[in-house]
Image (tube, rainbow, N blue to C red):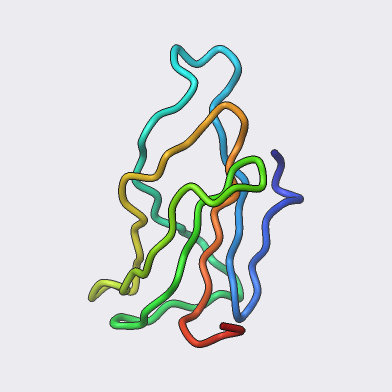
Length: 95
């Protein structure tokens, strides 16, 4: 997992995340708020679809709405040592 895996386009944002091998457990739960987005713009009230994939399998997915500050937070994401790909896309884009 490196920043070369990062996708930041007008339509979508993706990032690989994961636990290090020395982590005390194989997985954990986190909240994720993307910051410093370049091309993927978020406005208050916008709705997005998201997914959390690991090993080619979808672990979680859902919809999220941007708060009054134009931020979205994906709550209770499962993050594994195997690694995860978090994808966020504008609702209605390439559905």
